[in-house]
Amino acid sequence: MPEALSIFPNGIRSTAGWPPRMWIERLRDAPKVDRLVVCHGDACAPNTLLDAKGKFLAHVDMGSLGVADRWADLAVATWSTIWNFGDGFERALLEAYGVESDPERSAYYRLLWDSHNGRIPGVSRV
Image 1 (tube, rainbow, N blue to C red):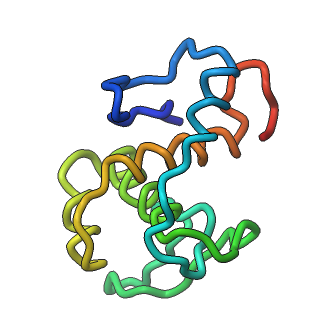
Image 2 (image 1 turned 120 degrees about the vertical axis):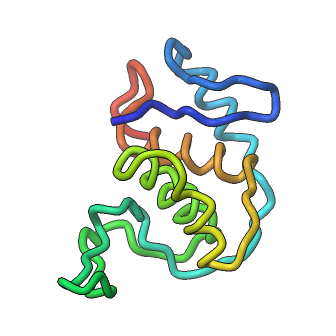
């Protein structure tokens, strides 16, 4: 799985080697909520099933379903397009959703997703 590779406001591009306190400090600095919606909680491409014609069929792995800022799902969904399909699909997903890119929210929610999935060194779950 990819590490939290995102552009943070201070220019940091990778969390590799961060001690747990740096992750926690960054996660305390949450951006203002854009819009509360029902979120999947793990909106990566493999959790969206398509039929043989490429039309939406279903979402799976709904264990983290809940109400959250829409960027909690958008950040992971766009990130997933990179590791599942390669570069070039992130913008198309955001355009289809009808929003502009938000690097600050994307970075924060990608880091939050990483922390929830046990990727903070020395910390099993946040």
